[in-house]
Image 1 (cartoon, rainbow, N blue to C red):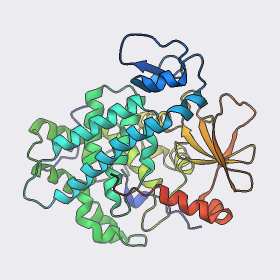
Image 2: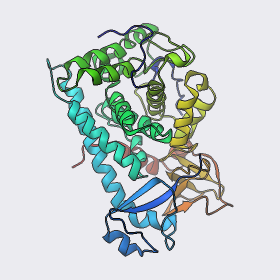
Image 3: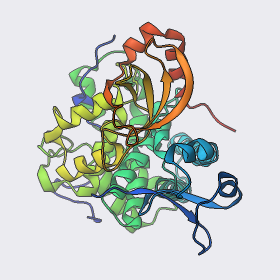
Image 4: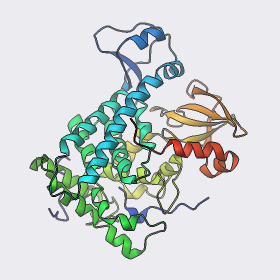
Length: 397
């Protein structure tokens, strides 16, 4: 299935060679509790919250229950919400792995599973504010297993932030799940522990078309849906300034949906370690988009990414004005520099009793800067090793 230069997505990643090499070394959407029945919740005790089937939504209109602070709610509900998020992510990674391992069969049925996994991701993004943090995981056996899932999570959350309808967001998620399957043909090249040569980069660029061609093997993917997904996938590595590939289209020639996949693909790649470079701290990656990379992406896609991730994305490590090191738990949709954080190290980089802090409730405490991985590794190597290992996704049962 070939695509002409000017074919656009019907529903209207990373340029691997363009990512810089890292040197070693709207109105606030407040939290809400929604019951499954029509009764309202009035000043519930934590025990009552645990007894009921409650959905915790970051996309809602009102504040939590009157008697419960945000920090207390997180403390008392994070275990349940994390379990739900973990189950969804585990199933999605399993589906991604099965997909990648099926590519060399003559034909296979996998679209139903992909659509199911993506639909579950959509529900988590709408109802569970902790789920976006799972995009920080990486599968060490083959980074593509997690990359497909993480890119879907990030792209879909950008779409939700831009108020995309559900069906269009699901299509975007499925395209993200499939956008890099063609890379599997070039694993011997991308596993090199060095910057690729110009010739190798040119060869890798064939993967977009390969990804589209693999869709023809998926027997349970209907023709119309295949056309929609293919037209998004083939444009993943195009750029707003015309510097992308395979057709070097420019500006609005790239569909808006494809531009969301593009920016999610690059952000996911920057914030994860690759064989040839270290990971970028998430806030540093965000700064790249606002400075070095801003002309490469549709302004609306950039707005979606910032609205989704904030300036200090979930799982970022930051230095507070108190000297402490904290991990960002939730982005603040109204004030992008004042998220909810979890204190993890004191000013001397020694592990401390963990506790949550909503920076909107503590105006005298602020984020001074991102905490650099290198400094943490030097000051507390044991903690840094455990932090890295924590983000390796191993098959979970």
